[in-house]
Amino acid sequence: MNFPRFGATSAALLLLPLSLCSSSGCALTSKADPIEVSYLRPDPIAAGGAGSGKSLRLERVEAGEADGRGLLVLDDGTLQHDEAFQWTEAPAVYLERALSRTLFEAAPGKVPGFRRDLAPESVRLAVELRRFEWIRGGAFRVECRAVLWDKDRALWERSFTSESSAAQPEALGKAAGAALADVAGQLRAALSGS
Image 1 (cartoon, rainbow, N blue to C red):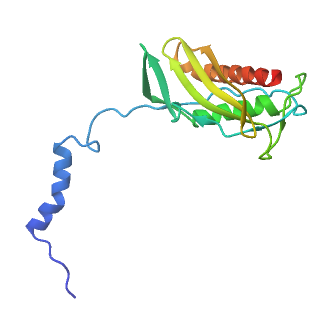
Image 2: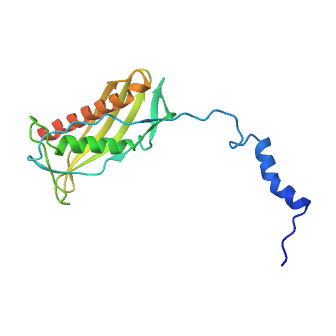
Image 3: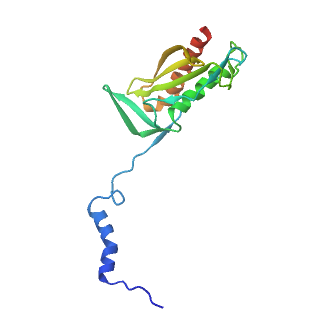
């Protein structure tokens, strides 16, 4: 049986990547401190009214600029990503969940809401999340654009914005939950009036 022989040149070729990595400051050998990541989640949204009113189909919420899980921070007019904070889910999922609870689920003592309708020909609500950001040292902002469709005709198109106080990163979950609840409530009120 013949085994391959490794000479001095073979050993040098095997060690070459390791030596290049250590001499060039490779991330594997770096002594820099790792980034500590904090995971964020908005506070839960209370349910809206019982689903006995108008029928409505909520389409999947689309994400505009707020398409990732990283925290978007507005600092001195510049939008930046803060790698130290991550949302546990995509922000559009949070808005879709807030709208679904506010529009379709029952809560004691609330005005009747909407009936979920999955038929393709039903009146449908299309929503795009445009802003899901922290204004450093001040507030958390949620902004969305909604279009109510009846077949191929837009019945109305509106934007909804809410800000909730969040001076420190520790308050982001509560502030995001409050802003989501407010935007969902504004949208529900607009739908109830149409």
